[in-house]
Length: 452
Image (cartoon, rainbow, N blue to C red; front, side):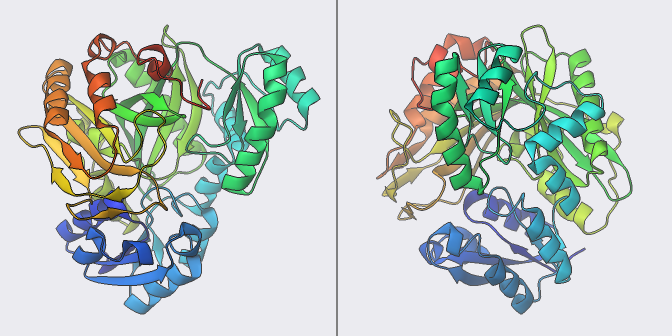
């Protein structure tokens, strides 16, 4: 096992990794920007190093400073969490070249799945279905219209280097397609430095369902069931649950086997998630593979009893995966709500100082957060404040516990989406499990700019 791990992230995921390391007897090194000097991960880590000013580009994405902090501290390994450097193949390679273990998959797997067009090809070759779309990048408006007419409207414009909903637009007509192409390309170039776009058919009434995978360095690989992630705004998830209310044992087995085929196709190691779109008849199509721990990993932990972050660390340290597929059992139901610091009407970030904080508790309730009363939410980063999770023996109990937990939760001094989440969880459609990726617009009657 490692002696010391540097955590190359911030906020709740940095604190989550820190706690896993502590349970394993591993010392921790936090890195932070000047804006995060008073954050909980910095206060609780064994050591901490400032890696730059507030902007992420000069701190949490500052690879030379992060590597320097790892070497100065004598860390054995770096855990990137999610976001930032977690899916940067070059960062994984740089870690290795400096004698540091990257707690994640090999650079080759990150690279294979990071380019969505290459990923589509690899997955197709592995016998996993993909949505109809362009075989390669669309070169211009004329090429895009030609592909869309062959596929059939509506279509989704997607960034080849995409993630987090950026560089994605929906087009229902040739005129709309021409209009959104330029915006999608500009957003992709700004976010990823790569404006390459491709098209996929937009699946109506689809659910967004993902399968968690764990793989060690010795060829052992298991899936841990699925998560339902259909409630989204701007293609970013806000409510997730495990298992999905629409997936039966037969579909779970088929999707799990498909996810493992995807992972084997790129010789995957460590924790990863294969994402699918599923139609009302249960036909599923590969969407992408996230080569990192997911924000919503906690609901899988609650229904399987598997600590995914500790599993990541153990696998990276060279330990064998002790789980077999038949060991994986789903116990009960878990739901997660992402509590964001944002205007509930426009979903735009709303930073400020938290003047009061009351967190819920009780049986089956878990809160992953790094905020506290008096903490100033900086304007430079993602708006996620906390992940509120509730577990129940059945879905109905989990829904009731989540409703109760949301009723207890109080965050004062900043605007949040808590009231919006209360409305989602209390809606009849949510209670009955009638979910789809257009839930926010269809059920909540909220128009999300850039949405479906």
